[in-house]
Length: 107
View 1 (cartoon, one colour):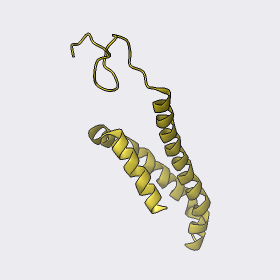
View 2: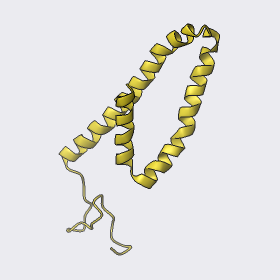
View 3: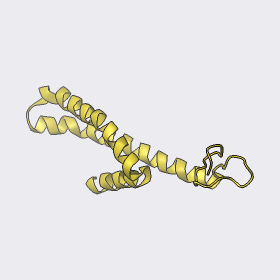
View 4: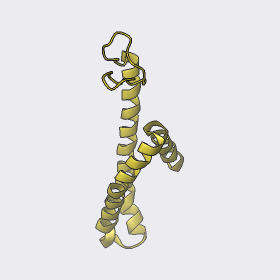
């Protein structure tokens, strides 16, 4: 492929010289996967938000609830670039699937 040819999703140059678009079915599959991932992220937040006050009260340290929430948010924020780099190295799809499987196994 020369530098003047446009790159496509499949890695091959289009036969007619135009862009290569995803079919409607492929778009729905990709959108379904992204929505499933967002649903699991929201589910994770609601589980932590619901269970955390009970966990902290069992340890008789309700005054440290804000520190636990802050630590949770800081670690998830700090690990985001790490997951981005790992997905660049190994691919987004395998990492996304591994994260979903790990979440489901942990749940």
